[in-house]
Image 1 (tube, rainbow, N blue to C red):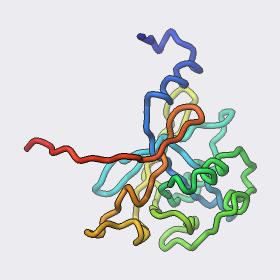
Image 2 (cartoon, rainbow, N blue to C red):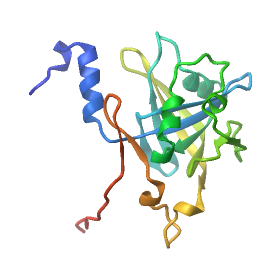
Image 3 (cartoon, rainbow, N blue to C red):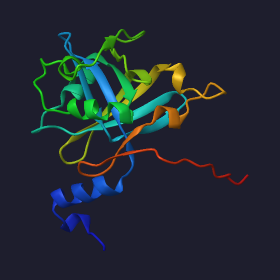
Length: 199
């Protein structure tokens, strides 16, 4: 099969793109609005950009041309917390993806406990094994939607001691991360192996 993007309906391209750009980690992002309402939502167009300083990217589409609450809050306040998702919390992750009015607090609706962050105002998720406190580094409008690409500089990392290995490094098998596939499909990390890189 060969697809000419310019000659194919956007809905079809989107469907294929989501199914071949896999597996995707899920950023479970908490923000706080200017009026003090907490928001929590998952996004799978997410990845590392730089390690020095640590910067990650969040790709967030718009809804009917309007910024989603996460984007709006992050642009307005410049702060967020990005949590790594786990298989154990998968149902609650999906529950927080519902389209809700800005005045609704997803933590409360999903029955998730908040804890205070150290350097930013948005709360951390108590049950998350990894939480990254971040500050907005740059905002770019991208695509024909347009959508929003938000670059976030990580300023503090919280890691649960239970997922550390004997060298005090995060062990993916203990984290059991949740990955996003296409459609309604998700995946777990079932096997890992090492490959020696050439010098």
